[in-house]
Length: 310
Length: 119
Image (cartoon, rainbow over all chains, first blue to last red; front, side, top):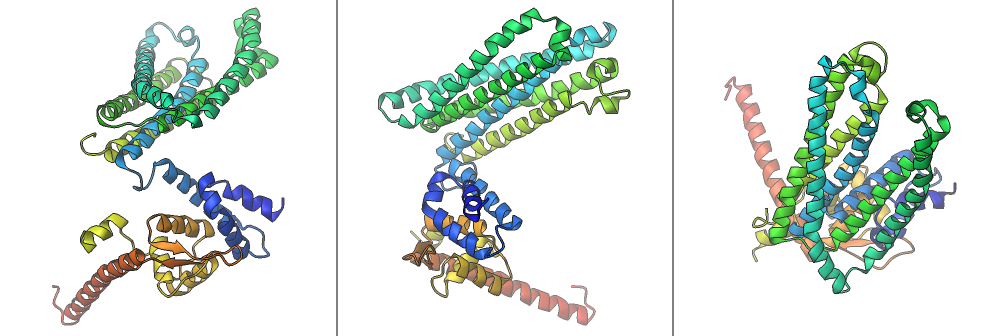
C-alpha cells in the first residue's frame, strides 16, 4: 500500500467536511513528520484518535460548541443507537435461551422463570417507549419534510429499504427450509442451515443498523425543544432503566440456570466454566455496554438541555 | 460585554493542553503545522501528534482565536487573532498568579521547616 493511500485511509477517520477543509494540510504534515519512514504506528493512532474525537464533537456528543438543545438531541440519539445495540444482544440471548424450561427441573425453575419474565416485561416496556419516543417526534419531522428541508434523508432511507429487502429475500427461503428441518437439525446439527441462518442474522443486524442510521439522520433534521425535548428526556431515562433491568435480569437468569441446569448452559462442569460460554457471555456483556452508553447519553442529554427544558 | 465575559464565551485554557501550547507558540509569529510541532517540543517538551495538532487548530479557528494565512505549497501558516491574543494574555496572567502564590508558599514552607516550625 502506497504512503498516499495510507494517508487517505487515516484521514477518513475525520468527518468529510473537516477533511475538505484541513485534510490536505494534515496529509502534508503527516508526510513531513514521518519523512522517509512511512506512517509510524504512533502517528496512525494519533490521527485515528483525533479523527474519532472530531466525529464525536461534530455529532454534538462532546464539546460545548453547539446550542444546548442540539447537544441534548445528539445525546438522545446515543440512547437510540445504544437501544439498537441492545436489541442485537437481546435477540442473541433470546435465541440462546430457546427451550431452556425443558432443561431445568420444575423445582429449580422458579427463580430463572421469574428473571426471564422480568426480562420479557422490561423488553416490552422498552420497545413501547422507543416507539412512543419516535412517534412524538414524527409531527415535527413531517413539518420539515413538507417544508422541503429534509433532502438529506432520502439516501439513508433508500439504503435502509434496500438492505431490508435483501434481508427479506434471503430470509424467506431460509424460513421455508427451517420448517422442513427437525428441532435438532435447526439447533446446530445441520451446518449448511447454520451458515444460512447466520448470514440472515447478519443481514438483519445490518438492516437494524441501516434503519437506526436513517432514524438518526431524520432526528438530526428534527428540532427538539420545550415540552417535546422534556418528554424525550424522560423517555430516554425510562428506556435506560429498562435496559439496565434487562441486563440484570439476564445475569440472574443465566447464573441460576448455570447452577440448576449446567448441561443446558454448556461449558463443562462447574459454575465458573458455565459463565464463560460465549453464546451467553458475549450478548450479556454487550447488554451492559449498551446500557452504559444509554446511561451516558441520558445523563449527557439532561445536562446539555437548556435549564427550562431539562 | 466585560473582558471576563468575553473570555468566558471563548472558553478557558489549561496549561498543557494543545490549544494553549499552540496559542503560546503562535504568540511569537505565524507558523505552519510542522513549525508548530517543532516549536512546541522545544519550549514545552511536549511532542504533539499531527492529528492532535490539527484537531486543536480546527477548534481554535472555529472559536476565532487563530486564523489561516495564505498557503505555502500544501502547508498553511496560522496566526493569532486579537481574541486569541487577549485570551492567551488573560489565561497566562491567571497561571502566573497561581505560579507566584505557589512558589511563595513553597518558599515559606521551606523556610518554616528550616527553623523547625511545623506551620
